[in-house]
Length: 193
Image: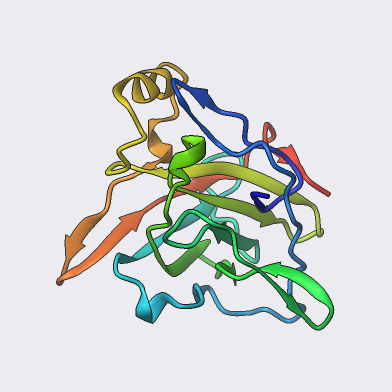
């Protein structure tokens, strides 16, 4: 059974590639979280490591979203979501959580996840945001420019919908792969709690 992360399905049917239609597993946010940088477990032993950072903005697109909690979840390099039981609760192993600073900045150190080729699943990172009042929203899933499953047809459909910013283009900076992704907490996001 293919396990994925949040409580909604990112149903993006693009050509033969589509995200999983499995149920999502919610992850509890740790109280007292103050750091705006986190690292995915097993980062140091993965082959295609990268850093993703950016700024989260409020709906006006200009005001930094301070004290917002971001959680990313992803598959391992084989495209499988590894679920662990910690203190009696199930948790996706390859997840990380940060709280944006006063400037709305965040940073994650992670790796390029695998895509499940049997199910034509793209390499993807799922993101959710918890706003200061505790409400959680699903942010659009991120994809990878170098993913062979992200076909020309998929890209055309994403461009038509104005979603090409969801495709991460990893660049080499100081001999390390990096991606920048700014996001806006808009009123059109899907509430997940």
